Length: 299
Ligand code: SF4
Image 1 (cartoon, rainbow, N blue to C red):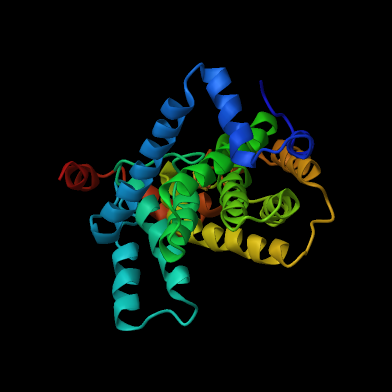
Image 2 (image 1 turned 90 degrees about the horizontal axis):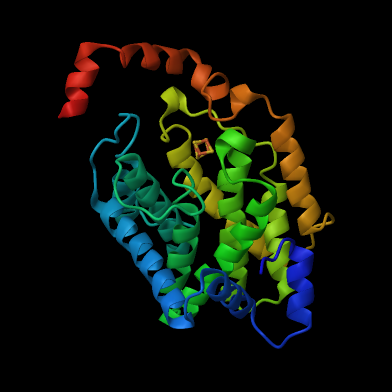
């Protein structure tokens, strides 16, 4: 069994008394031929990997493999200790957790790809910050990650979540949509608000290119994660006020597919244009072919 569109999901929900996570759970158990307990256990394992990545990333100051990042999370944590964010503790957590996870990824630390490694900080930072700030119990935490997974799965049946296929809109955009829908679920919003959160999120990231400097998942990827996490909660805030996406969710996904197909291959993870071909990026690329660079890399 597969749910291919958001409209289909809406219909299934309307004809049953089940919650969105139950529909996804049943579908996965059936497809994978596993018990509900085993399925939930594996989701919990993923959740724990996300929490561990945050814990490690918050205190790790080590430079990343491509040497273009790795010290920003600790910098932000220090700043908040000295001067808390004017926005809120939740905001502080979302930003630092997103940076922590994506820096861990760039150090080749253990993360949970969600939906990809480059976008791995978005879903965990939003959900885990909300779990902590709103004392969400473990069962509901698992449910929310199942909801995020279902949203990602429906989108990826039409657009593969890969920068090389459809640009960063398909990686960070899908991650932000997953985070937004799951966050809306956490607050018990109905399916219309959940889907409007997803649509608003995706619509406002359409066209985002993938142009990683020197081919490493570092620049712009690491800092893009906290930006997209805030993007996700902006979508939930708007949708929960009754603000609707004029374009329905499935059509937004269609637009993302079309935009990805029209995007030049030089802006789809090939590092042949955009940020990857700026003056600074070219200088950095040349520097990485020196003996000194490789000897430092070994250390
Ligand atoms: S810029 Fe490309 S490599 Fe970096 S996160 Fe986005 S899709 Fe992934």
